[in-house]
Amino acid sequence: MKAFYEDRGEGLFVGIMTRYPFPLHVHEVVEIAVVQAGSCRMQIDGRSYRLGPWDAAVIFPLVPHSFDELSPNSSGFSAFFPANMIQEFANTFHSALPSEPVLHVDMADTEVRTAVRKLLQTAGEEPYAFRLAYLHLLLAGLLRGMRFVPTDAYSERGPAYRVVKYVYDHAFERISLASAAHGLGVSESHLSHLFSQQLHVNFRRFVNAIRIDRAKALMSDPHVTLTSVCYNCGFENMRTFRRAFVHETGMLPTAFLQELRTGGDLGGLKLPSNKAES
Image 1: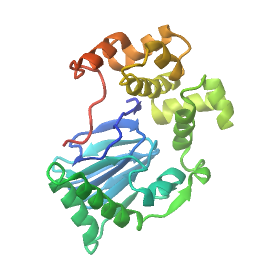
Image 2 (image 1 turned 90 degrees about the vertical axis):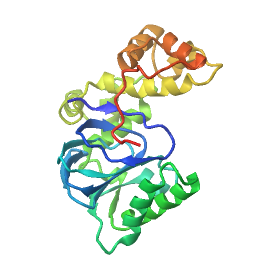
Image 3 (image 1 turned 30 degrees about the vertical axis):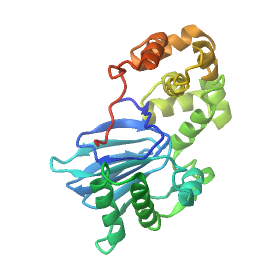
Image 4 (image 1 turned 180 degrees about the vertical axis):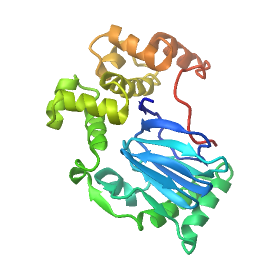
């Protein structure tokens, strides 16, 4: 099962937790998953966690994770949002990681439980400001129960995070396995082994997924050209750009751009499905 880079968009998404296993992946946004009934087993940055009723997982940006097993009666809550959405917590999301990303919400912690229920109840009803307020309440309740370590001190405990962060930061440059290994201070064989054993994906495929995600965002500009998109996303020529675009989306970039500009249906894209349901 391969890891992939998931595009979650830039806004706040609230919905019910996945009912099915979801493969190893990373995304730029913060994710919160709270089990309300049943149980699930998650992998977060190479470690396995079993979550029961009212256990919560807080997934920081670019941390590899998956939902490996879910009990038949499992149900819960999921939220996805940019790290900068609530400024009070932005620095924590950018500069630290939780020493333990899973915690139990005690029965006495009524604020957290109320926030979860309110977010689910008002997902499509209340004005956006209400959902933002409930999210703020939820974060305040969850993060106060966690301990954090600076990301620069996390390299030994979470090598996958360190690698993903480095690759994401340099994906739009002329990055290669050799240059990434040099930048990370490891051998090429060690880096290749980490991708295959912990992320279960080829290095180049992972880089291309990040680049194509950016390419799709750039193509929403009505004045942009495919040539500028190609080079702004780190590709050396249009041939490699087209090949990577087709591999990730199932469409040529010209076809994607035409559909985008004519308001066509892009629902046929071969992209990973969302793991939360609205």
